[in-house]
Length: 43
Image 1 (tube, rainbow, N blue to C red):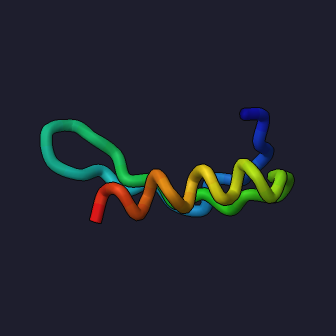
Image 2 (cartoon, rainbow, N blue to C red; image 1 turned 180 degrees about the vertical axis):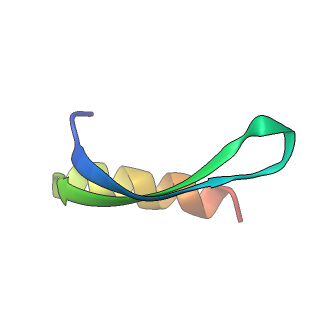
């Protein structure tokens, strides 16, 4: 995958981990679908 995006927020979480919010500015439909499927698996 080659995706272009911009970090919108970076929040420090537990155990020195970070939560990132990314706005994708250049992404193919196929890559978008792959990411959506990955996120749904975490539910």
